[in-house]
Length: 56
Image (cartoon, rainbow, N blue to C red; front, top):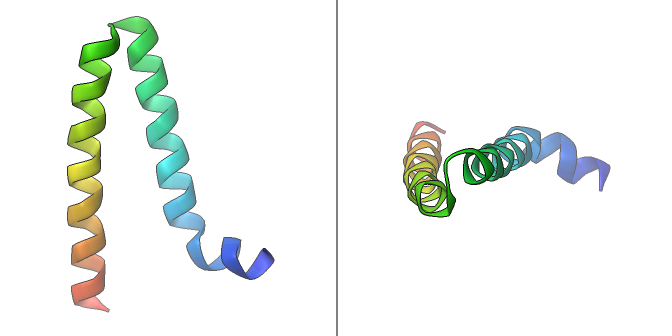
């Protein structure tokens, strides 16, 4: 478990932060805006992962 967390800590923190952001938006502005934000963040996350893999 320690090796997994040290290797993927940025990804884990990014996903947890994204979930907290979506939950906060859902309670503040409404469910459908939170779903659109989740979709947008997933697309950005996919681009970041793709960029990181092409660089490494």
